[in-house]
Each structure stands twice: as C-alpha cells, then as structure tokens.
Image 1 (cartoon, one colour):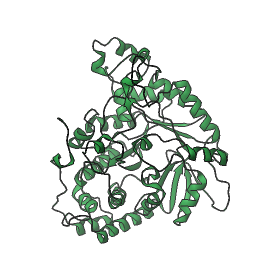
Image 2 (cartoon, one colour; image 1 turned 90 degrees about the vertical axis):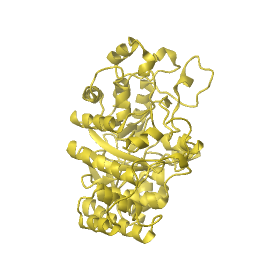
Image 3 (tube, helix red, strand yellow; image 1 turned 120 degrees about the vertical axis):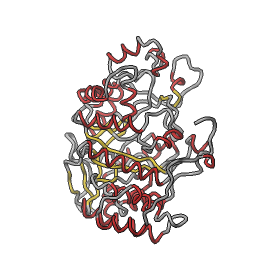
Length: 457
C-alpha cells in the first residue's frame, strides 16, 4: 500500500457479484447441500440483486442457520474456564487494524519514549497462570506481539545472534530491552503448569519463531508441543485473501503461509481453532472466500479445527479508523449474517462461537440464535479488544453464564478446550464454578469482593 489510502480509494478484484440467486442459495442451505462461494455471497448480502440488507431475507437466513445449529449440536451452549495471558505488546509489524501493540523500540533501554505496554518474563507468566489454575481455570490462551527479542529457543537465538543482518530478520538481542520475553519454548513451558491446557502460538507467531532459519513449521510446532503447547489459535487469519491483507496488514504473512502453518501444526498432533476478522475494508466476496479456505483446510487436517470464531472488527482507536481507511465496523445485520453463514457453509466444523467481548451480552445472546453454540470463556483478562476501544469487559463468571444462557431457553454446559469433556450445569444448583480442570472443584473463580475490584479496574 503506497501512501495513505482512504475508504473511497479502495478497489478490489473480488466483488460481491454472482450468477446465483438468493432463493437458490437459501434453498440449498435449507436442504443441507454443500454451499459454493457464490451461495455464501448471496446469503451474506441477503441477495446481491438488492441494495443493502433486506431484513425479511436476513431473517430467513438466520432461521435456516439456527435450525442447522439445533440439528448439529442441539440446545446446549458451551463455555470454558480460561485465562488470557498475553506475554508482550511489543511489536513492529504495523497491522492497521490493531491497537493492542506498542512500537517495539519504545521498550528498549535507551528509548526516550515511555511505553504504555508490557512484557512479562516466563517466571511472571508462570505465576499468573499458576494462580489462575489454583482458582479453577484449565485453559490459558496466549497471543502476543512479535517482540524482536523473541526466539523459539536457545538454538534459534544463536542462529539469530550470528545472522549477518539481524534487522533483516527482525531481531534485536534481549539485552537491548528493559525486560526480555525470553524464548517461546520458555514461555510455553512456564505456562504449562498444573495440568492447564495451553492454547497459543498463532501462525504469525510460528513464523516469528522460525525467522532466519530453514526450519519447517512442523519443526517449530513440534518443539513447541514438546514444551507443553496443546492447541493453536487460528488468529492472525483476519481475511484469508491477499488483496485485503495487503491493505490491513501488509507486514504479516500471506494467506498461503497462514494455511501452511496451520496444516503443519495439525500434522504434529496439535488441535486448531479458526477465526475470521471482518467488518473493515473487505466485502462479502472476501468473507465467502475466507470461509471456503477454512473449510478446505479442515478437510486437509482431518477435522483438527474444533471451532470457528467470527470476530467483528472493533474500529475505535485503530489506525484504519484514525487514518480514514474505514468509517466504522460491521453492522449488527452483518454480524448476524456472518454467524449464520458460517454455520451453514462450514459443514465440517461443528462449533461456531459467539464472542461476548465483541458483541456484548445482548448481542452475544442474539448470535446464539443465529447459528452459534459456544459462548467463549471466563477470560479473567482481555487486553486486545479493550485496547482497540471495545467496552464489554474482561471477565464472565459461571453464574453470569448460567443466567444468560438460561434466559434464552438454552442449556449451559461447561466444556474443555477440545470439547471432549462436558458438564451440563443445573441452573437450580448453585454456587456455580468450574469442575472439569484438575484443581476445579466448583468454587466460583472470583469471590464477590474480587469481582467488584475487577469491575472498578
């Protein structure tokens, strides 16, 4: 992308135009036929023959998706007891949709700019996760900035230290920084405490962990698995169409490399999730192509993707919004159709997640009637969306989940990360807390006084 680009400047090769009709696409969806990209475009737009989204057509798409959800997973709504522990905000990739990062140079000892971000040592990560495991969580999710001092392990650091042009591989030695993030292996090992499930190392982080080497992604993810990594979050996907990535994240890996990394992680036995981050510069054709690439990937990895997570772009405080590349995020109609078409199109992925962090309580519950069946997790900490301008909080208790899920007539179910373990919760038998983890005994994760402090923060 050369120079500043505004919303009106953007032109794409892929546009939401098809030879299919909305009615034909909807009939295929209702019949359970495998949908094409053109079918998905028609459903996401509620018909390309009309300007804007026709509400009557949208409701028919939502109804079909909700029916499919009931057929595939029934009336249960699942959630997990988890913690977010992001290691560092230091990053110099420059994605325009992100406000989680802080410029990596501001973390250097000699910097005259005081950073607003953080970097945790592996010892600090271990302490944070161990405390949360004692409270009863059994999953830790960790997605971090691409700190220049981060290396996969000590062998990788030696390779980076001896590189003839460290800047070319985005490397600076840890001594340059106030706090070193250590190595990915150290951090994963530190977080792998008390039987917790470690969900970390996106494809973008996998790329960072092999830079400057000829190692395959299988080699990288194999070492991380040995360190304690259990599953890989399919974030950094954004939109899996390069003409969109060239606008919103030109410094990030391309579509093919993201797919290669995910396939490699599955090849060494790691479970996967997949995401889409929509509602910025892309159009419905890009969203449909993204869904097709995820569905094809699921076939190649033999069902390793347990869930699909649509993430509605939070535009406030992001460079895309501040530089007038976008004027806002997705509409609620678009959110509902994204959830619904994900359910209808991804016929080989059972679970579609509704993000209360992105949609809020009311919106999140609505998505559970549009095809979604999972309602995220307790989180305990959430920095990424909050720093982008999101305002829906950082913690969700089991009691909150029970109240919210039963309010729409559905069944609250505690689940493990891989959905293999499940516990149906009786709403008439409080108190409510996690029971699936090694140290979870049903005690609420936060006492009432802790929750009031968290709310004040």
